[in-house]
View 1 (cartoon, one colour):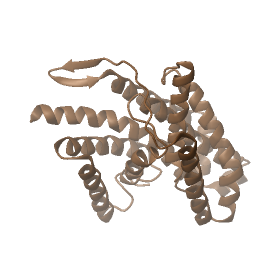
View 2 (cartoon, rainbow, N blue to C red; view 1 turned 180 degrees about the vertical axis):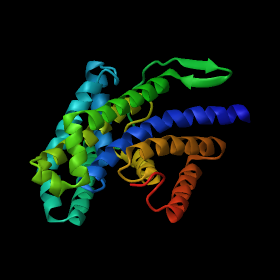
View 3 (cartoon, rainbow, N blue to C red; view 1 turned 30 degrees about the horizontal axis):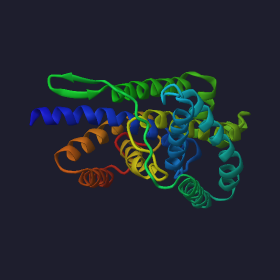
Length: 284
């Protein structure tokens, strides 16, 4: 029993790294634009298909394709923020949510028509480490390592660079930032694009591990939203802690019972937390 729990703990930590990256992008967009990016799952799916076709057509390893996918998703985020998010946000945040949901559906169903709902796979040989009878797939260790590195780079950009200071200033008070001469529209665009680019990083880590299909984002995004709410919307540190907690909870319950029950228990825990602490684990 102890061995099973240890295995579930390890799997949960590895899964938590994926949730952490997704929640970082969601928290960044919410923290700056004050809106929830409901198209996050569609962007993740686009990144996974891009990884798949780079591997299928040009034999590019998903991890090696990471710079290409990140640049492509960043560019996509810039375009969507400039021509869809920005005009809608100036009219009404509520209207923006409706438009983003519509955009997500357009992207997903376009991919369904073009590529069918059939699962696709990127099969890459991977070692499995055995430590005290615990099985640890090397590809998942790599995914966790890359997610940690990406998170550290993200934190460095936000906390130590000029663009990071601008983004934090706009997130705190857009009006005062504008009065100080900061181009708030550009800060919005960069923030949204960075959030979408983090979907690209996650896509490269997921592609060798999970199957790819047009609605795959619907599997990973709900727990990522849970992580954001659990940790506190807009709170990066809280999001990281919550990501690993949710990953471990899902893994343990999923291994002992089933994945569906694991998701139900995770949502129940978050609902109970919000009842006693509406701002989440560490506040907004």
